[in-house]
Amino acid sequence: MADEETVYMTEEGLEELKEELHQLKTEERSRIADEIAEARAKGDLSENAEYDAAKEEQGKLEARIKQIEDTIARARIVDESTVDDSKAYILSDVSVENLDTGDEQTFTLVSEEEANISENKISVDSPIGEGLLAQEEGDEVSIDVPAGTVRFKIKDISR
Image 1 (tube, helix red, strand yellow):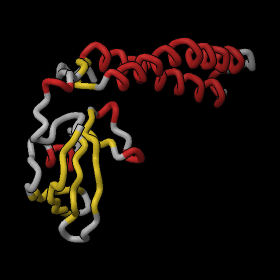
Image 2 (image 1 turned 45 degrees about the vertical axis):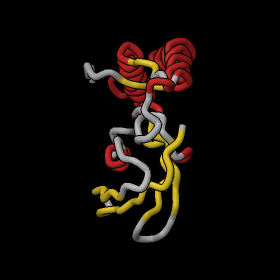
Image 3 (image 1 turned 120 degrees about the horizontal axis):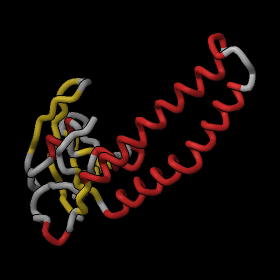
């Protein structure tokens, strides 16, 4: 999981990760420790499903904490004033037209950690994000996605 690549993030995204890390280390660790103690008090651990479930949840929690700590250690805040506005880069809002359906959408290109499809924030590491990177207004791109190939025309790039 320890990837040495720099993670470019917004200041807001980094703060959200730090808040999640704090919540996991304080509230969630304490809650799971209480569950483990309660399950242990019920006796024989070899046949105790509650104990096994709590220990599994603890393992997942510790893995998520490690992942967040690693991401924070590699994070760099993107200075929007240094980003070329004429091309699609991280933090760009890219309006596209699907050339097959005529539908228009606007995506915000963000780091993987900030991606949230319900907010149209897509990772620059996703197929569509990678396909849009470094493109300019008016460019047409074909991007291979799991469902096939999608063709976009870039209508607008903004910040």
